[in-house]
Image 1 (cartoon, rainbow, N blue to C red):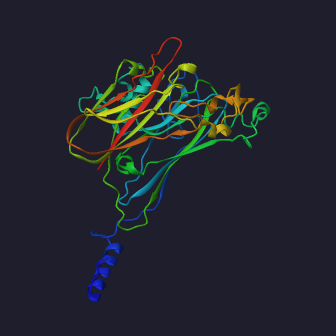
Image 2 (image 1 turned 45 degrees about the vertical axis):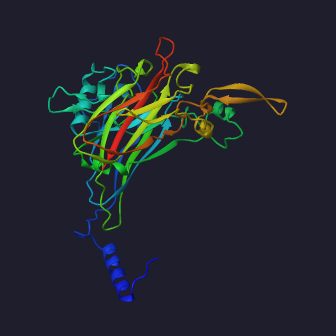
Length: 407
């Protein structure tokens, strides 16, 4: 360690103490924490033929897609100080016994108003352009339709809550489960998107569950902002750009089924250099029954501007850890040999390994460091070479989302 004369050391310590206790341009203002309740025990269900809400409900949101989407305009306060921002979600079945894909998503300002008007009007659900699966030109020449930014992806468990205390579910409960859970809870850290979340005059936050029952699910969700107590802890100058989202967000939209035909190419443009860029990537495979893309391991390849970012196989083999959230999961007897003994046990559907998801859990994004990206045009390519075709009997598709962050 380098040593200093006593006097110089005192001056250095004093300077350091001054630097830690004050800001270059004065202390940043403090306003305190802030919470926005999105939904509180509200229902997502499916009622065929239900018309979309054209006026907000008493809770301030709109019901779309026959009840499977709730869309709420909110605003989050701009803060000079850095905030820890958390999205908390609680869910229980209100009568739907199945596992269903779900997502919380957001649009900013005009993109949200455009999404709402198109959903209310209907008839605008082309596979590659609806809701900006890729960024696409808007009929208004001054605007571009952007993809939904995915805040959290989740898969509902089988029947948690509504069926947790039924006699039949109690009879099916394995010894390893002390009691069926009454609900499921997930959290997502949104702190890295503070500038995008608070920079919008109106943030349009939606929740979608692919339910097909008129009972559906009940959901509670809120966004919590906890402001830093440090006077100099400034909010990061962090930019966010949703690149694509193939999740089906409209009743007449088709799932994205083209990966078996080749890579999906996602062009994007940067007006200036993007420093310390990262990519958040979400992928889940669905459909196809036992031999389909939900239950088969499918390698993925991500390529940016001709260079391979990552090649891997997204797969979950820990689904048995969520058994207590799945009281209505189907099960089958399984026979196997261990140490010369033939043993039998019941295997639940919720325990089976799947393409990057488990019933009852949120889906974690893959985060990749990209370094610095030059200003100009770029192309992200997503390939799933073994993706199987959608047919009349096998309904294979992939829900993919990608978001770019940079300084």
